[in-house]
Image 1 (cartoon, rainbow, N blue to C red):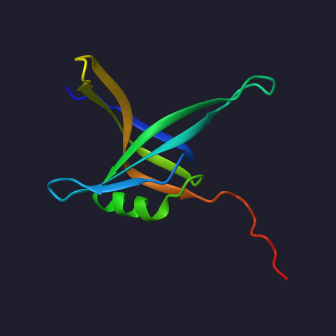
Image 2: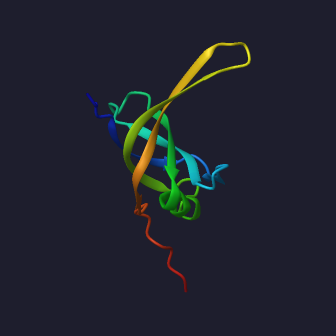
Image 3: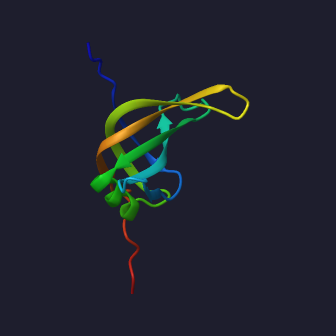
Length: 114
């Protein structure tokens, strides 16, 4: 039986994306989003940093369109990477493999020029 692990997040790019080609020639682009959580007005702000991975055509678009601070929505599926470090300890992380990316305008108005 197959389970669903879909996710939709919206946040701000924490840095410029990392684009590369795999040994087999596939394009992959990785970046991280800072996602602000709703909190009460007097509470400390809460932020999660979510890793995103995109492939092929979407990776190429992301590498040319995402810059630090850009507001982005990612729709995709959750994946877990597992690996062993040099000391033999198993580590893991959850990421989103994006299959749809939406670039959201920041809402800032352009400055008037005279």
